[in-house]
Each structure stands twice: as C-alpha cells, then as structure tokens.
Length: 442
Ligand code: PMP
View 1: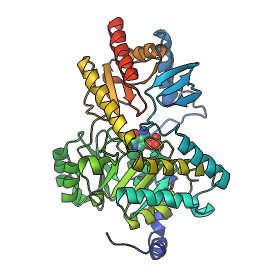
View 2: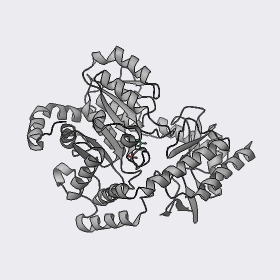
View 3: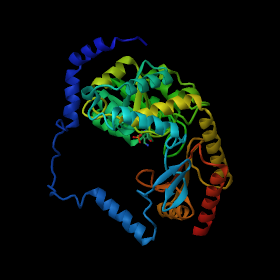
C-alpha cells in the first residue's frame, strides 16, 4: 500500500469529490427519488402504520398466551455475567459484552477521566468541533491492531456500515452480499443506490457464478461478509469468498462486530483465526459495543479510504456528532487490555466451546453454530421460544427470544451470548433448565 500525504489528499478530495459529497447529501435527503405511480394518500396519524399493526399483533399474542413481554426489560446494575433485574441477579445472556469489559473498573476510570478533561460531549461533528487526542490515539490503535494504514471511529456500529457503504457506492456500482449479513450493511447498500444482489450463505461458488454474470456491467463492486454471523453463531467462509472477490476485481468489506475479541488465539478476529491478511480486506469494520465494552464503530483500511470517509461520509465527520469522549476512552482502554489480558479471550473460548458441546450432548438444536460466542438454541416455533424465555427468566436466566422476520419463519430461537465471566456452574444450570423446561412444555 502506498502512503498518501493526508493534506494533499484532502485538497484533492475536496475539489475532485465535491460533486460526490453533494450527491450523497441529496441522496440522504431523498431528493433523487421518483414519486410512486399510483397511491392513496394517508393522513397525518401513524396509528395504522404497518409497524404498529405488527406490534399490536405481537402484544395480543403475548397477552393471550400469558407470556411476559420479554423486550426492553428494565435492569439496574451489571456485575460480570449478571444483571440486576427485579431485585434478582440474573445470569445474563442478552448482551454482547463478550470479554466482560463493560463493567471493568479500568474502563470506568478511563471514561471518568475523559469526562473530567473533555466533558460529556464534543457537541458537534468532528470536522466542526475539532479533534481531541483520544480519537487519534484510538484510531492509531485500530490501524496498528489490523495492520492497516489508518482507521476511523464512528458514533455507532450500525451507522458505520450505513454511512460507509452508503457513501462509497452509487447507482453504477454493484453490492454483492452474503444472504445473512446484518441489516446495517443492507441499509447502507439501499442508501448507496447501487444494485444489490445476494448469494446463499457462505457459498463461494454461488458468488463466483453471480460475479461471472454481473460484475462487468458495473463500475465498482464490493462483496460484503461477516467474520462470525450473529444470528447463527457460525463462521464466515472468509478466505474462499475473498479469493473469488479478488478474482473478479471486487473489493471486500468484512464486518467483525462478532469476531473481534472472540476468535483467534488472542482475539484478533479473522486475521488470527483464519489467516486473513490485512491487504486481503479493503474495508475492515467492527463495533465498539461488543468485545470493547463501549459504543461506536470503526473502519480500518488504506489512507485514501479513511481520509475520504473522514471528510465525506455522512455520519462520520459530517452531519453527525461523534463518539462521546468517555466512550472513546473506554474503547481505547479495552483495546489495550485486549492486547495484554489474553486470559479474557481464552476464558471466553473455553466457555463457548463448553456451552455448545454440552448443549449438543443434551440434544438441544444449536443449528449451524460452530463454536463462537453466539449460540442459538432453536425451538422452531415462536411461542415455544417466548414461553421458554419467560420460564427461564423466572428461574434467574436472562436470554432473548428471536423470531420471524429477524430469522426465517419456523426457526425461532433463544440466542445466547456467552461471556468471559460466565462460570461453568452458570452454564450448566442454564442448560439443565432449558432441557427441564422444554420437557415440561411438551
Ligand atoms: N454489524 C453486526 C454484524 C452487528 O451484529 C451489529 C449489531 N449487533 C452491528 C453491525 C451494529 O453495531 P452496534 O450495535 O455497535 O451499532
């Protein structure tokens, strides 16, 4: 990779890409959409919006079945693997706090110091409010961690995908993605206006066929995939998909939201677990809200990519206030701890390997999960999943039910996020209760 002088590049970007920046703005305002041919105007009320109709149906079903609403559950304290809910310390499987960083005293101290020094907000987009050294330090750590030229931090992981993909690609481009990629990447693809095609999950051959037909009809083409898939807990088929993408002259974006800190001997994600080289992926993406106990997202890659996003991606520096100082300080502290406290990764991996193995021994359906921090227990039927989560909650276990349309119809599940702080006793207790309840519900 060549090194680029950032100021010269910025000048070039400002003149050369002005039009594209404006176009991105118009696009985000929806100014380029044509009106739909024939519609019946709807009035001011949102009471009959499809979302609220669906929600009413879900609530009615919960009432009919006498199942507690499992969502937006109020909790008041966190300690390691436990959450204080209704005055009971429940074993928690519902947050992505994989490495138990979110209640770590060092992260809390770093966050408090950042508040004392910089306040609770930088109060505008970075391009306007200026830099604080914390952002540069965090971005340098990410670039060093992934072996890339540069990195950029965004205020949310979701927005990182939306704004990066939405900004980089346009109507002449092609976005090809694994069928199971996260909604944030799809939202970015929709915002970009590029043509979007998907290939069946992890199927490199299907990708190859698709690119043979469609690649040459488009300017840029990017292939989107994940290191670990968050609904099923299986690994991405990363290297074969990268090889096909490169063969067809496409760039690659890899979302490591669930692989950073969780896979590879020391938690270095796909690079360590699958031998992916820094240059194999053009756009390294991840979230700060999972293994790093904070909130936000990052992109790591070439100097040109990052400088472009830094100046123009709506949601990075433009039009959007950035990560609060406390969150940047917490993420920086977590990233440094990830390098030194490798026991966290080892303990997490011991825990999830045990949980999956024991679940299978007990005859539970874990789908295609293959030894990651996400382990689904598939019940199939939505009401079974909802009833199971209610029963477990009463027995001191906090876990979420997921069902259609988030996962395919008939594949409702409880999704367990395993944590470094879970003890073997907690995992055994949980698995035994699942088995007991399933039997009792038959
Ligand atoms: N990518 C993936 C694969 C995710 O699962 C998520 C959220 N769970 C995101 C991106 C968005 O990250 P965040 O929640 O930190 O905004």
